[in-house]
Image (cartoon, rainbow, N blue to C red; front, side):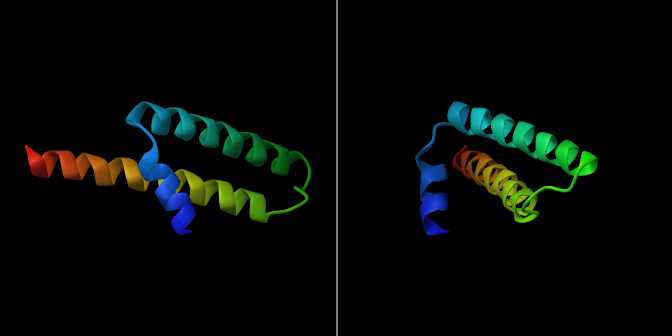
Length: 70
């Protein structure tokens, strides 16, 4: 988990936004595929959802840090 957290800290805000869009698209595709026929591994849904949450958390953490500095 620390590795993922460190990876997100190293990304620029633009890269974070791009990664967030990609993860959200992947989550949407997984949900649609799961609605049509069961996904091989339901854990994929969970891990993608958590990945989106991690990215949003990092973005919010940076927003709070910027506000505190100003």
